[in-house]
Length: 450
Image (tube, rainbow, N blue to C red; front, side):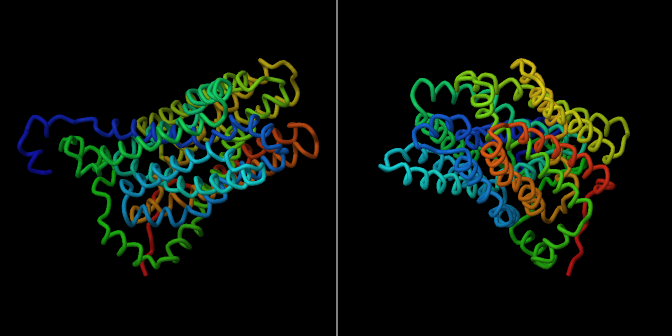
């Protein structure tokens, strides 16, 4: 690797931009990650009719993914720190795509009860398979990007959740309308299997990548990027030296990190409302068809995507202007989440276009404020980027368990989505409280050895 760099002085002197190609790849993978999570929200109305599911049963099935996703976070973080993002992420993409593909066949089981059980089990398995994805993204960004570009990079891969809704929600709605819900799972699963092979071929650490120039490598490293990753032996030694579960305790007893973890839970309440109940809300509460709901759902997603990219650019811009990391991260987060509270306003209007406008504004704000993964890359101990990201993601995705079930009960008991929208809006306010009151200075945590 070094020989190839020294053999070409012109290549060594020119700062290449391989990091952007890596960012594009994790953006595409994360787009499919969220599209696969959202398959059930798009096909849910058709599947409810076929299998006779009520709102409470749908809430539990929606939550199946997140039960496994949350329970698997700590093992996933340990695997990432032990074996690296390349191999663990490849296995993750392959398995979640396989489980998505298998969901297309549940109707062949003969009875509605068997099909519903199989759907729950496959969604649960898919959640376990996807658990390394976001900690791996954070680990890759921490390796490939200097601090002053990390907010934008993290915001871009995180905004893939909205891009997935913009592109795949209308596509999946059309596939359901034209060919039946089974087709959605076949198309998404097969495409994901190809993506796993692409990841294996393209991904490497910056110091090992044949296309990275010495100038780009130095730029990343001098800016705080972890360009060499950690060898397996070094990772194992660092984690053992920190005391195994003692390392987990250190992370969980750090006030700053706890505030960040709590905020991510609250932010993800909005995310999981959008991923699970939002299309159902449009069909049931607003009287739209599945196809109309798929198209309308893309509008807030476009705003969320725009806000997500803008939040990262704004945050990194504040750093370049000399503001502290604390100010640069907190200003977009607090401002964006305050804007998201407007989702409650949907309860007080009857015109569909105003509802869509308020939803779009709420998700624009949520996009601006969704900088948690940048904060994780900024603050996690270098020896445990995977584990810290996994704990952060575990807290965040408890919302994936709580949100669909709580909303399912609220809708079933009241016959209305009004309480659900208040629940979502209050969690946006709790995010603001967490960053203003619990999280103090944002800085990298140093582990205590022994």
